[in-house]
Picture 1 (cartoon, rainbow, N blue to C red):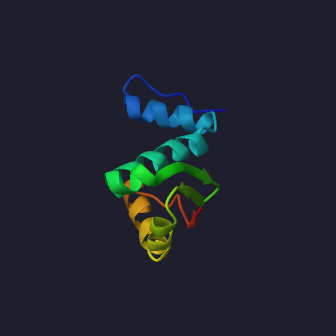
Picture 2 (cartoon, rainbow, N blue to C red):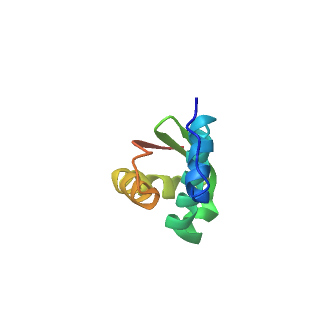
Picture 3 (cartoon, rainbow, N blue to C red):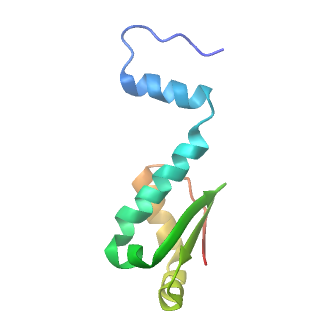
Amino acid sequence: MAKRLNNQSSVGDVLKQIIQVNKLQPGMDQIDVKEAWKNLMGNGVNHYTKNVVLKGTTLYVELSSAVLREELSHGKSKIVTMINEELRRDVVKDVVLR
């Protein structure tokens, strides 16, 4: 059973409690990762990005440019680090570029 929050609880604490109790964190991670990709990669990469999906701890990115896919494949570890730093926690462990 969830602990009862008192009248002094902040809105952030209440929202965290709702997310935890209803097991909504994976869905929230999905949204956060998509937003982080969009913010970090900029317009050039976003133009060629078709889809961004988080499954477990693996980020799948579908790109329409083979050249861009090859370029980004050289910096996968940096992409993982940048996204995790943006989210301030370890959500992504691997990136698959398609």
